[in-house]
Amino acid sequence: MAKLILNSKENSFLRSKGQTLEAELHIGKEGITEEVVNSLNTLFNSRELIKGRVLKSSPIEVKEAANILAEETSSAFAGSVGFTFLLYRPNKELKHRLVLPKKQVEIQE
Image (cartoon, rainbow, N blue to C red; front, side):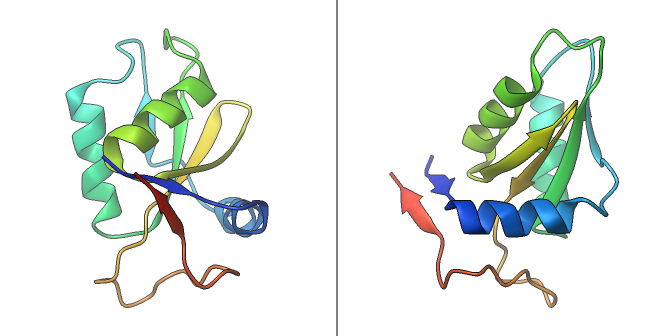
């Protein structure tokens, strides 16, 4: 799968937007399962920016979890603070889309 690559300006923009979001995806003691990946893909159908949280009982670290999920869902890891992380995937079908500071997101194959 192709992984999105964001520059520092785009990451900063997305992190500022993510501050007001509530965590919608939670990773618990079972770590990253197929259900977690499916839930994330479902969330990406209705929004472009998702905040996730890795619970203390999880066997996986925050950045590792975010990078694995970004790879599995063809999204971009926009940053993390504490136990939370942000993932971004553009969706052209949404009415209200995020307009990044840069014209286009680069895709690395």
